[in-house]
Image (cartoon, rainbow, N blue to C red; front, side):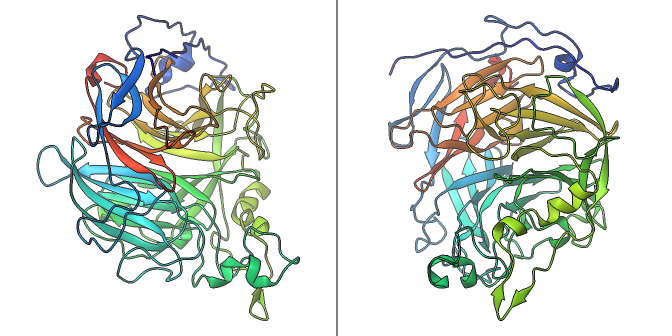
Length: 491
């Protein structure tokens, strides 16, 4: 495979709505025209095949000078307990400082659906589910020093967020439970053929806190809502938790959880707070999944969700609510109060007073280059929310799949530029989105055994020396990437 260069340089201009000011690292992009091109010094140059230092197999195309090592592929015995295999479907992650220099503690989700046995020992939240988190102590070059099961008995642990007090919040992207009919059509065969949810012992669709250096208490934060949670980010100035919802077939919402005590002060996230949903000021149910234009900006407010953890009735020991009804039960409360509609909100990250989040299928419909079926027909949007000004802004709107294809997880680099994971139908890339509005390719999934599989869980080590990321599949794995960061836009 020869080297190639698929850099794309876009021009954007401000289209401010209502004259709202824009702050944060991307203010240069939305404040006026942007002109960028080869030689601007923000990208890292053309990509080429680079062998994995674990075994010499080419799994990534990277710029010259970068190296990587994959680790903990699915099925590998845990270092701490060889009787426990590493689960598949590696997803959201966060990295924390370890016990010494160049050693980090990485907490990683495993997005596993359906009934099954919990990972590892301990008091699982649900004794019939196989999702959760693995915590790995790893050096900056991807060598595993220790690992353990840190959350079990959960389901569809998709993304989440790194909390500034030293925890990972893991999000369940589901509303499964014994009180909800599962995703399959019921009525055409015996119930046991379809109703996998009847095997579950607990309701799902919550967030869970996982301390970086220990294990979770496996207790959900129910007041933060029961919906298809995707990612979370905390504003350390307020202690508020911002959360995305990835609801494929229906509109998604952008949420804020205000805990009863400031977690920055208490060192943990408490239940019993208030859940809210974003609303465009003066506009009922604004459909923000449609074309906005880069720089479009809105003044917003928050509407309260009166019942964040709804009780779904049962009859004769059987659920009466379908999955489609349950998955919109929380969001519909916000939309009844005028909350905004988005398409598939996924990645979420905080940086310098601004929360960035991704709408995977938002933006313009450019047939035949349309997104998969579902709510939203674009190739992706990146939004920012500034709490100080209550302003929502379109940072980037993909004009087509060759530029940015269904963005998913995001993380901010030391420069404030975002690393964006793709979850498209063809080649998937790690893209860089710089403060100047330049988008470039940083890595390509070149594993012939993982063709079309998404990047997930991108997270920098806290000293920004190493980028950790996953290839998400049943046979997936984690990777540590390092190199001359100062040469381009991530530093």
